[in-house]
Image (cartoon, rainbow, N blue to C red; front, side, top):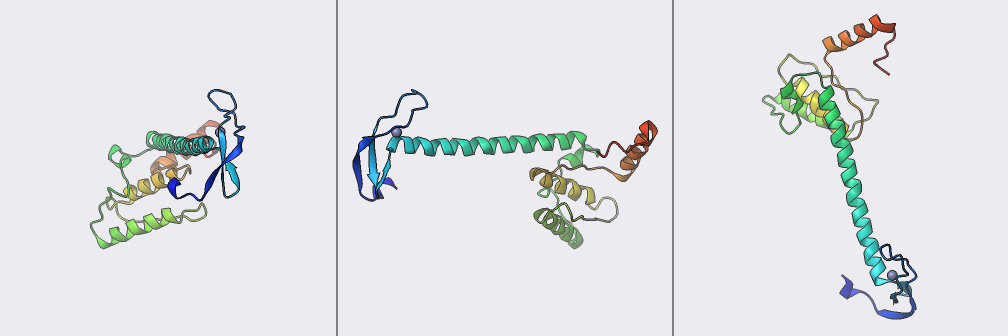
Length: 171
Ligand SMILES: [Zn+2]
């Protein structure tokens, strides 16, 4: 808190900073604190500038992530109810589902491009739900993700063979 600052005295020098608004020299009387000269006004502005910069960076980051998530949703090749799938709305009913959720969360937490995760199980136990949830979390870390079913994947591969015999969809 400012009131607890060490002895502050008034300097004989004036602030040479250029005011961003007036484009004139600040020209305020400088202060001295522990042999450091500073302009009270400019120092406050610098703090505010930094706060605004951090805020706008956070906004940009969130916007980029939202755009990636939107792209993921529009490219998603599964039924609509799974598009809303997240870890939070995955309700494990059995102990193995509980374990699967934990493994999926751990996989995201320790995600690196080298490690894969294979989930196996009969239809309807939540493999897709967890896969989509994993994808979304990884997108939030600015990686590109694709969710595709094996039949769709096969169709996509076959489709490219017909065109120019190159698997150009991969690149
Ligand atoms: Zn100043």
